[in-house]
Amino acid sequence: MIAQTNDSFVRWDWIWSHLDLVWEKVVEHLILTGIALGVGLAISLVLSAVILRWRPAYTPITWVTGIAYSIPSLALFAFLVPITGFTILTAEIGLVSYTLLILIRNVVAGIDGVDPAVKEAALGMGYTRRRLFFQIELPLALPVIIAGLRIAGVTTIGLVTVTALIGQGGVGFFILRGLNRFFSTEIVLGTMLSVILAVALDLALLGVERVLTPWSGRRGSAT
Amino acid sequence: MVWPAGVGHMIEFLGDTVVWFTEHWDGQDGYLVRTWNTILLSGLAILTAALIAVPLGALLGHYRRFGVAAVAVVNIGRALPSFGIIALSLPIIIRIASHIPNGVPIFGSGLGFFPAFIALFALALPPIFTNTYTGIREVDPGTVEAARGMGLSEGEILRTVEGPLASPVIIAGLRISAVQVVATSPLAALVAYRGLGRFIVDGFAVRDNVQIFAGALLVAVLAILTEAFFGLLEKRIVPEPLQASGAALGEETVVRPAA
Image 1 (cartoon, rainbow over the protein chains, first blue to last red):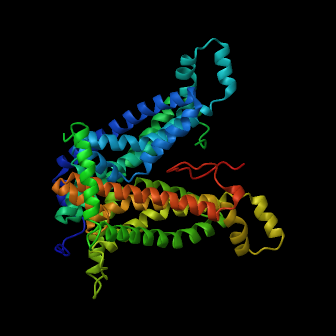
Image 2 (cartoon, one colour; image 1 turned 90 degrees about the horizontal axis):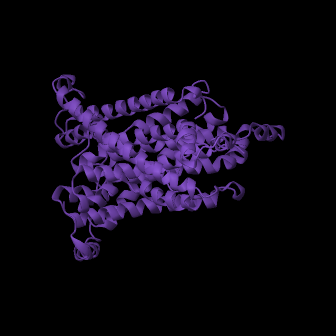
Image 3 (tube, rainbow over the protein chains, first blue to last red; image 1 turned 135 degrees about the vertical axis):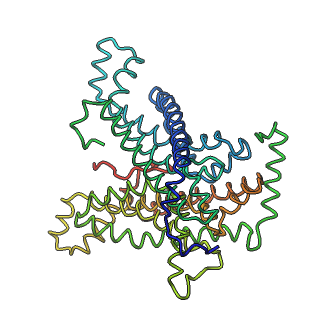
């Protein structure tokens, strides 16, 4: 097992000759992350809307999502495998459930933080509840919601690597195969790619925030 | 899809799980020993990380130095995939061991102890460090000034004023870190550590759903108990007026706005 002590820790030539596979796994990683964030955000928005309408729902909803959040990822995937097997569905159920707590908390906090005077003005202008939510509250809450998305996104990128154990995994594929073949190059490659993707996603979401909320550009420190 | 078709299958599956628990508790590979191995590994990693990160964070927070570094530590810590860190630690440790004449000591709990320990230790550091740093730093400067005016030394200020006032945030950091470590520790099975993760990873390999489910149950219970343990610790250590107003499970809030 303790073979390649003479080899270099990272064999760049191996990486260069496998760029196709690297690209394929990066795309797979981004798809797994994208679905998780998209579905997670959709569910969170619905549940947040419920909470905003009926406040007593906040405690039970955050309690349940909090429990889902504190179940270790490997255990959560393991719970699902007997039911949904080694499928992308198993991976996504797990990944989505980890985004909910962070997203719901930030959506609710973001909308709660909207200046009551602004809401009052909108209602005075004859806005319906629905229009108020979509055209006033949601846009003004965007910086806080995107802050939540950034945390959820970076966390999800890391968690996707774990799904390699259930046959998915994106760049986690390299980490697992590197471990099994005892080839450090692949382990380093998978880990570095995961970090790079996390940082890139974080910066991308920061960019999205700048574009969507041009008015908050100068405030800077309001995170 | 292996969907257990109907209630009958589900009851049968749960029955098999109960039988599993009665049959696999003893011996070196029983769940009692493996639970203990998991607690030992996680506990040592958290303890070592706390012994380093709490004094360091407190000192830097007290003198208000390296604020940028504290933020960077959190961000880097979050971006690092725990799976990758555990996997990476194995070749690194073996590489280091090849330079040590007598090798790295290996505990009875398996080849993977050192790689897993190093990885979990590295994962445990950032939340403890940042929360200690932020907690101490956020203490009202007026309060610290008053203590200084009363003639307290810097060490006394840290121990008797800043420490207790920052304790909710510091304990929250310990809790986040501990839950994360316990949650990650099953992955140590991949570097051949004989903890609870073995049931899941071995179960995946032979597609033994009962073993996978039982392993997941044990890991989840341990994680929830860890969470509860730190909740109790908070009640014991944090001065009563400062106790959190219902800190939710898995709460990741680092800084609370000062009143």
